[in-house]
Image 1 (cartoon, rainbow, N blue to C red):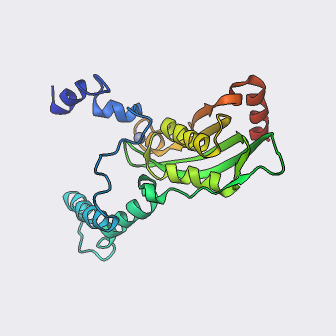
Image 2: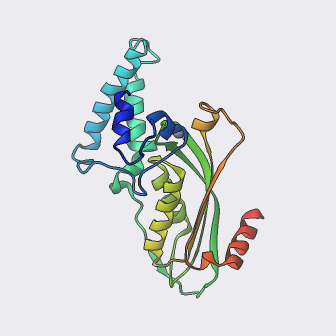
Image 3: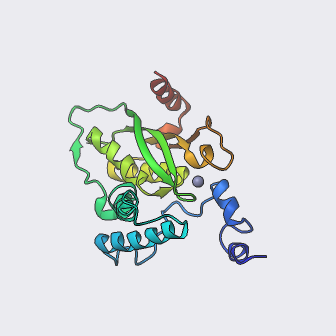
Length: 229
Ligand SMILES: [Zn+2]
């Protein structure tokens, strides 16, 4: 038995090898697993450190870092990780939520559909590309429509698994809007399934969260009708 298998036998994902955890997209927690001291290092320090480490990866693979096209790559990757595709790990990048009173007493469901997002699989660090559909029923508070989009983007910009992304968006909406009546549906394509592994280019994955009134069959049907049109 190699050391990888041994360590996993004692872990949460009992008995699965690291390879199987990745290919079957198993995960351990609904919170993004973070170290307690995740933000002791500044973003500037993190970028410097990632750049050094990424240049080592490129060097090990035999790439010539003196080449004009490649020499800036470690810095570019570091900047992209911290400022763009993984910026949602840092709570200081969380969108500020301005709430409004529901003065016009709109008390039906509100649906924001086809919110395009780009995320990355936490098992392989390759893209997840998808669409999120969000619905809620106001408890007396409403948020600007662009904020629904920003909540999706914030949680997408982390190493993710789709089930966790779905739940994190739903929990954020429930807390901000102070209601259980929230639904989140995500339909996404995982490049670790299409470009490697089983190499299935046509499958997509759908995950759902239905809270409060959205557990009611007629509400689910109503929502699905809006999404299908
Ligand atoms: Zn993956």
